[in-house]
Image 1: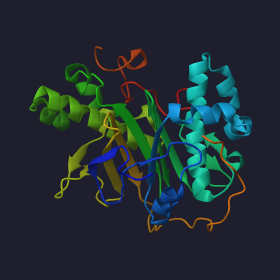
Image 2 (image 1 turned 180 degrees about the vertical axis):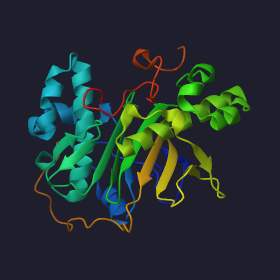
Image 3 (image 1 turned 90 degrees about the vertical axis):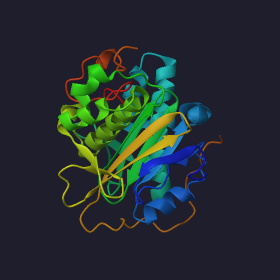
Image 4 (image 1 turned 30 degrees about the vertical axis):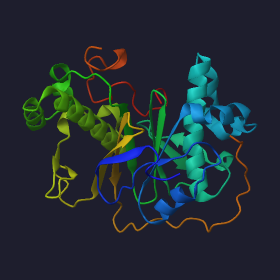
Length: 301
């Protein structure tokens, strides 16, 4: 596993290494831990198909899902249940690998806006989840809130229909001046950045994207307008050559990386291994939302 395995940096600050590919529960996880120990957020990407066998064979799936097992059982289709189980497994296994504890020992809950959080053991970590099509993206931070979002590069988006929902007036004018293909890509990039930002805030769909403004600093990096203290970092990566993945991270004052457990032998053993571009539930998004996926909420993710 390495950052070049299916991920390319499109726009990233040094604080954001490229996403790491983890093909299954057996890792390797050491590179993930190394990034966290360096004081930077870590991004992990995989596909639900790569983890499906592990999910089907895991004798501890019930314990790994924890309080989310009822959502798993009430998901109406088998494919939906498997995708749900895999996305939660990836998130829990990533956090567990960092902490070097059994995944079943983590208590995953949700905040008022649907933002996932670890309670008790691991509460010093911040986690975020996004998925679309086959891809699953997990962000983990020990230095402040993190949010992630991902969309297919091929996602059709209509600038005319989505402009007022996604862009500030200044952003809309800038995009309107671009050639159509570039405009669509920039709009999708802007959308994923704003989705990641609102996830990091814990706002989900409650925050209007058109009230959030991004710009570029002297080095060409994405910056949040009004962030005079420079506490926010943003990055966008192309993953597997087909997906646009964005991350937002708010650095806690004085954060230099939370202390993690000393390396040691873990006591767990993984199982071997069309229109606007928005779907029906986002046909007229009143306050943000990503094309093709719902907010990070208990009823949507």
